[in-house]
Image 1 (cartoon, rainbow, N blue to C red):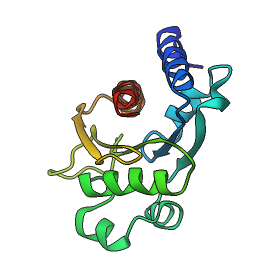
Image 2 (cartoon, one colour; image 1 turned 45 degrees about the vertical axis):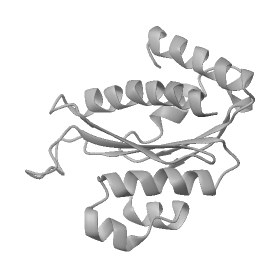
Image 3 (tube, rainbow, N blue to C red; image 1 turned 60 degrees about the vertical axis):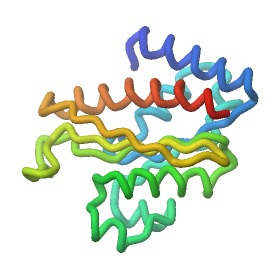
Length: 165
């Protein structure tokens, strides 16, 4: 399903989290669960992947993760505040040590002049630490390619989070 290089990176990541006895959770919108799917491609990932939330709709973000509708209304689902709230909500609604959230515009539709296709916001939080935000602007590469880029970056951010665990 995933290319060998991504699976290898995921395997190394899972091993590093397992070594630290740390667990992770994902909250995904534009990637639709691809990060969780990649991580669970690795045998033994159940010791690390605590759960994954696919919160594609605004209602799901609010109901499942506790993201305030006023935040979504004020900033839009694809925004720094919502990515941060998604990560914090995922951590709060799980037994994980690290949470990664992704919200973006994969295209081809849904873009605005301010929020173009390829805009993706990531939220990353480790228990007891401040929530981080990372923004990527991949460009209009096509839906699949934007999602693939987001998955690759997600692995990098989860690797970075190991420093905080």
